[in-house]
Length: 118
Image 1 (cartoon, rainbow, N blue to C red):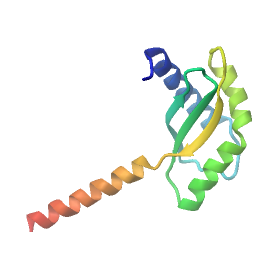
Image 2: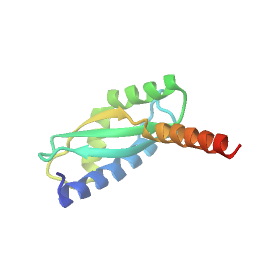
Image 3: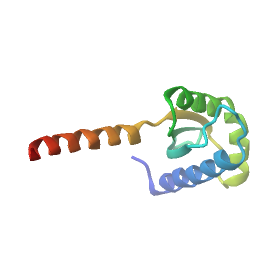
């Protein structure tokens, strides 16, 4: 169970990564509609899973995640300058499709509601 301290670190890293990805990462494969949705830092601060959401085509979504993983060492260096923590974690970027999934579920529920109304 994450502690309050770990939750604060997660949020601070999330905020800093969003800023770094938006302003510092210059990769043609990276979509402009990329956002950091969640960060899970391990308790020993060695590793972090960074969940990103990309609002684009499937090909561009995967290319954006690949670009972020390719530039992880650059992003980690920028992160070390942006946050003041004892150890800067190694970053692994993962595609977060929870937003698309929730939109799909909402649409299905609306369809059911409309069929019941008829």
